[in-house]
Amino acid sequence: MALRNTVLEMTRTHWLEMLAEAWRAYPLEGCGLLIGEPGGDSVHRFVPIENEARSSRVYRLDGGQFARAAMDADDHGLDVIGVMHSHTHTAAYPSPTDVAEASMPLVPPHWHWVIVSLAWGYPELHSFRIAGQGIDEEQVLLLQ
Ligand SMILES: [Zn+2]
Image 1 (cartoon, rainbow, N blue to C red):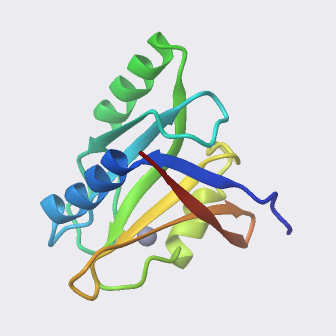
Image 2 (image 1 turned 60 degrees about the horizontal axis):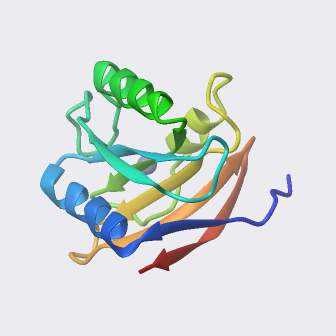
Image 3 (image 1 turned 180 degrees about the horizontal axis):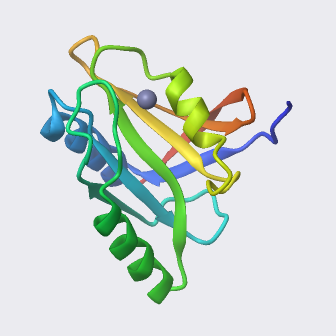
């Protein structure tokens, strides 16, 4: 399935916050939420969320923290626009598990899927759109 071409905009601070969360959580997978204008492509805030799965192979966003972050975003006219998580052993590319989760009925199709890989000792951050079995990498535009 062809996805529309998009970019994900974030500041250098957001980018650093996501790398920092990946390292903080290591050797477990780290994760967090991207907050922005509803349906938007620009990160206003990154909110680290505990990995409830406490695993180096999978992540599950802590339900309570997710709900609080979503309510706080809503209070400011914002919404969850995507999810970041880290891969500790594999490339910054969606795993079959990631694709399956992105395709679940309750997951908004416009979400951005940011993956930070620490597999090679230095971090790599990439962002994707996932629809059905289709994976499209999108450009990450770093703002000042
Ligand atoms: Zn993953």
